[in-house]
Image 1 (cartoon, rainbow, N blue to C red):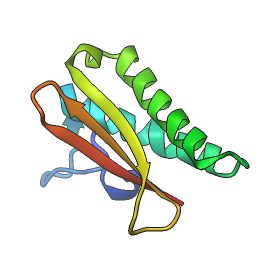
Image 2 (cartoon, rainbow, N blue to C red; image 1 turned 135 degrees about the vertical axis):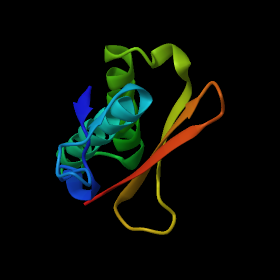
Image 3 (cartoon, one colour; image 1 turned 180 degrees about the vertical axis):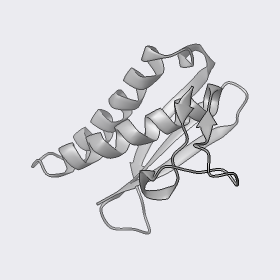
Length: 107
């Protein structure tokens, strides 16, 4: 169980002003988002080729998946630079059920 975070990773409160919690896949996706954003900010400042940045972001998402119970539920993890936004990487996880989780990592 994790504390639910909102946009900008702010703590989320319920209507009764209690901390909201999450479990399962929602908690896994939140962990991926937190670690991928942090890692993106770490590698984007390096002078690396774009393809290497994408590979490192994918690898970090795979590490999060292997730390938890969701690795076997994942069909693919991909990262690509956004065609519409500068310095933005789109990280996509496709589950075996063909459901997707996508997050935009930006400066």
